[in-house]
Amino acid sequence: DAGITQSPRYKITETGRQVTLMCHQTWSHSYMFWYRQDLGHGLRLIYYSAAADITDKGEVPDGYVVSRSKTENFPLTLESATRSQTSVYFCASSDNQGNTGELFFGEGSRLTVL
Amino acid sequence: AQSVTQLGSHVSVSEGALVLLRCNYSSSVPPYLFWYVQYPNQGLQLLLKYTTGATLVKGINGFEAEFKKSETSFHLTKPSAHMSDAAEYFCAVSRGPGNQFYFGTGTSLTVIP
Image 1 (cartoon, rainbow over the protein chains, first blue to last red):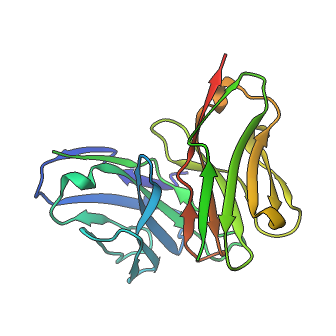
Image 2: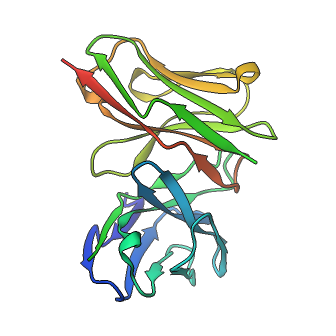
């Protein structure tokens, strides 16, 4: 019963380095999402994907890249990390075949950019 | 456009007292409404949801919420707070399956022994 898993859970990196956060779900949900959580802002959508090879920008996409070659994986890449990208990142999935579309969240990845 | 406003970023209640966390939303279509709870260093988990039908919905851990269309509200309540209820609570709105969620900024609940 793995559900949705994120890795790494904690990451410290330096400004300018590339970082990839991994997200894997075992439910075959069609939709996957990346959010960042910052104090005072709640959760803000970075990117989402409706299916494999279909991605779209959310509210705060600048500085991030995503891909979805397989339904179960949705990695998030920071191409050149900046201090403003220090945050907690949450991956979520949703099954649009259900009648509620509720989100299921991973445990989060806490990223610190020095 | 959709948005969510949670009144009060911090709420403190005594153990055994009523918990009331406020959520107002704006939506141009009938909304799907959700409350999520986040414990320290964990992801968000669903407390309860309103989609259609009965406007009073019951969730896990004794929480419930009432959808009031005329007030565009979806306040979360629990009759008697427990220490284990201390957490961050998020209200969210969606237009339904496959649509984006819009989250409030969260309310941190402290329970005083």
